[in-house]
Length: 269
Length: 181
Image (cartoon, rainbow over the protein chains, first blue to last red):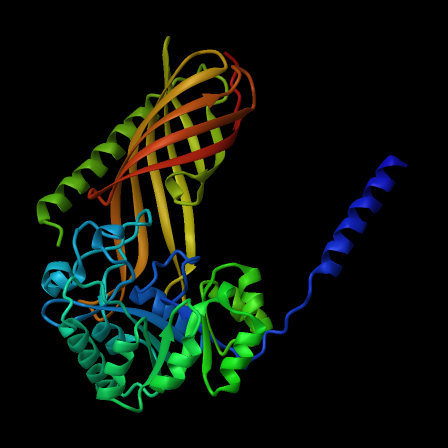
């Protein structure tokens, strides 16, 4: 008798919990962009060739790649400011020559040799990408305050986009200065302003940027609609939990830079 | 690039481990109960988890000696989404102190890792084979005639004989193959 009552109680609780959970429709209007490839929740480190290629093979709409540049102008896919955050070597990428760091491997994972990779190596070897979207998050961890580094990195990136005929690219910038730089060199290049502060919509409209990128927690439905009504596209980051990914779809975000590629792909299907 | 000397050194160490392991197996003591244990380890030498077989090699007055081999497949599909699993095989020798329920365990061995990766030099897929040195210290609980065995292990791993790592594992195992004393 007690067992039966206990079973009924458990089933009621489970039933109530599932009823409370709102079903979110994973619409195809939201592009699935793998953050650094497969996102931080996958055990391929982000920005490795393996993570990026795996995400593309899995069927994402695109990937986000963090871009830094060496002294000898090699564009490198790397997220953190310092090399020692992920690798054996210390220092900044923009203070190293490519030959000094080309054999570096990510050390976060036991028994793995996933290496640092240049953007050129990525686009030389990844599968068919003509219909994919590439977000390039330009990281400017430089001590140079003259803007020379930014000039070089933007020029190099635009050259590479042109060389590999990447049709669908978005350059993410954290400052209006960098965005203006991109626009001055290639006016048709799409630029997203990546900032978590108010007034970002006004800045985008003023400098003719195409969209905004923010933490998913920073968005409200009104802000998303306001940006979209003003002709801007909306992209979000930090979707590293199921709830955050659900929120991205609930808000109708245009590009979800997800850290849970497998989950989102499964839901979208 | 890893030097040839390193490669030679690692191969030699693997051979020595295997020879010591094999010779100990043939010298095993047949008068002890529960010579074999099958266990599941969470985290541990299989990165996220592994299955392991352990065999008692020799029972001493103060210390018992065991050999163990594990198996872990952590990723089934490679970056091309093809079925090419990453496989880790830990091979360990263990000395276990204590004759009652609570034991101190010291272990030493190697992990053979085989995983699929992308090689810029080859311009494509590559399968890497690596050896890593592992040293473990564990608390082990099993009653003298109990079937179940539990371990909490602290590892120091020299990953690919290059990167020092600290790692932990917890294991639960079932002891079997009784022979009367």
